[in-house]
Length: 146
Image 1 (cartoon, rainbow, N blue to C red):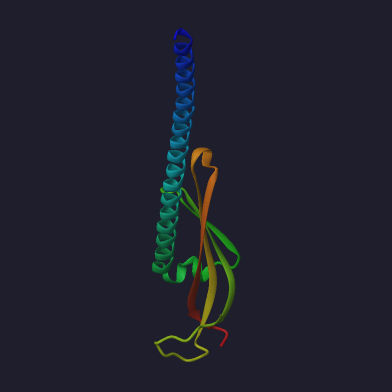
Image 2 (cartoon, rainbow, N blue to C red):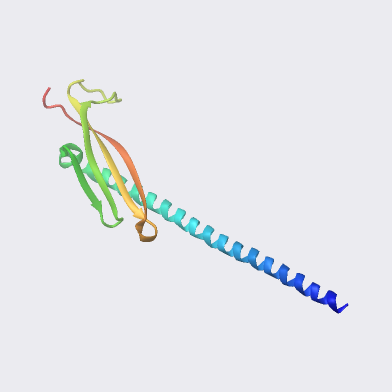
């Protein structure tokens, strides 16, 4: 009978060891899941910041009329939104005829400048993650050359 009590103690210790390993692995897994969720939330926040900064840039440039970078830029121009830590590039692509629109005009009166607005920012620990959004802009301008 005394011999069996030692075996029960041995099995109890083995079960305790197995439960400890399972509990530790679950705790590590939960911590890893929490970090992944936090990183995902930071990425979504960065994406919203980029969209907001890009929309503000496009609206600001549209309100400047003839002084707009959409009208004057010939290569690439960089713009920084310091409040949101977003860097944007306005890149001129080509000037062509405009697409059809509901407002009638002479075919040779307007030309359209096609530009890409690329906005990017970093996020996460040590700014290791980065997100970029590219929007195409078509800016109508008077066709001076005829």
